[in-house]
Amino acid sequence: MNDIKLEVNNISKTYVSSKGESFRALKDVNLQVKDREFVALLGPSGCGKTTLLKLIAGLIEPSSGEILLDGKKIRGPGANRGMVFQKYSLFPWLNVWENIEFGLRLNGMPKEKRYELVEHYIRLIGLMGFENAYPRELSGGMQQRVAIARTMVTNPEILLMDEPFGALDTQTRSLMQELLLDVWEKDNKTVLFVTHDVEEAIFLADTIYVSTAQPGTIKAKIDVRIPRPRTFETKTSRRFLKLNKQLREMIREESIKAIQSRKRSEKTPARNLNVMEIFRTAIYNLI
Ligand code: ADP
Ligand code: MG
Image (tube, rainbow, N blue to C red; front, side, top):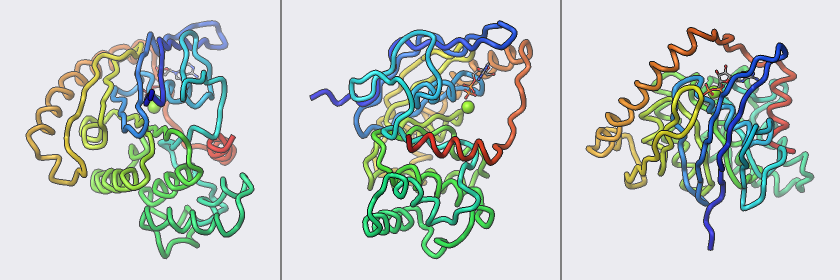
């Protein structure tokens, strides 16, 4: 049996601005994610991680190469891929329960089944008692837990996570990583998790692909080989520390290159999503 879930074959992406200037974000990227595997893509800011996830989500098209999910070429968005974004993207007018339930309602799932699933996920993410809370009443970590549940509840073939804990403080981030692993171990989903954080990649993943700075391409594939379940103590194990040192050196080199190239082409600053963008990003998970 072929247990490859996702295959990224020789993907390149060049953005062309309205002025006709082109920018090569990705060059000949190759990676594979096996069924039920947790894969991290690790690379410095600006190396094309979000671009790759958008290509896999079918939100943009590659300049060359192809992406296969279960052997079928990706041609556009689909409910078989669930995306969790870095920016909180919950519907502000829906409470926790309704946010998680939203996609199931849209898919026409009967009420009893919906109830069962939403309750299951609220328990998994530890938000019992917060069912009626609105996003504005929740901390960043809680909001991201709801975003993860909302994506997982629709049972996509693969979860695409774009630095979902990037905006959280160190302690919350650490707890969220443990929670994600706990949920993942119980739910057995295939995950492609994008991050620039070395420790996060080692702690979470079975396999880490390391990306170069502009244009992004795969520089190394690391087999993590740290037993599960992983706990807080994992982060002080010998294997963890060895990988941490090795990967930090790689990423440092790439980060220096990224900073140098950014000086040449200034990046536009990040901004918060507006309501329409929140709606659009959430809808991407359902179509
Ligand atoms: P990462 O997620 O690794 O930080 P991105 O995929 O967001 O990287 O971006 C990779 C590079 O492509 C960056 O230099 C970014 O400025 C550029 N880029 C991203 N989106 C666009 C776009 N729509 N048009 C032009 N350049 C873009
Ligand atoms: Mg990004």
